[in-house]
Amino acid sequence: MSEEGKNLLQRVDWIILGAETGRRKDKVIPKWDWIRKVILLADENDIPVFMKDSLIPIIGEENMRREFPEQLQNPAVSPKMKKKLYDICAQCKAQLKKNEMITLLARSKRGEQPKQFGFMCKECFKKFCKEIGLDVPQLAEFAESITIEPEEGEAEDEKSMES
Ligand SMILES: [Zn+2]
Image (cartoon, rainbow, N blue to C red; front, side, top):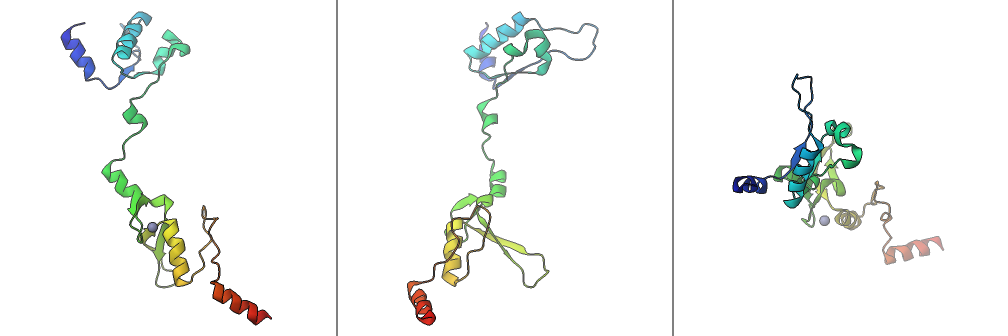
């Protein structure tokens, strides 16, 4: 193989192989041998190979390769995507996935569309509710929490009231 060819291969991230489709008169049907050569080169250069289904009739399902570049398997979260998916906990400022946090909503009167004004991680939310004396609401995936234990002093008050 030429130097030029080698250099070219080093810049290839992914090889996608398929047979020519359509009804062109001189349609080229790839030979197994060509495909094998490409696969060999790909393997030598650690390049993933993806074969389109058009090759199944030519090489058989058992010889199909459907590999993806790592990049595509684990796409890095783009900054834009990150902004969409992540936010910070209003209390502890931890950056977490929005869908793993409690969404803070508020409305000034009944029937008004609630406005989202922030997020809070589950731990902070539990603490927050406790601090201001609210029952931690029953929420999905939140089951372990939820009852606020009465302070010891209060519990004793209750007992003394019962007796
Ligand atoms: Zn938090």
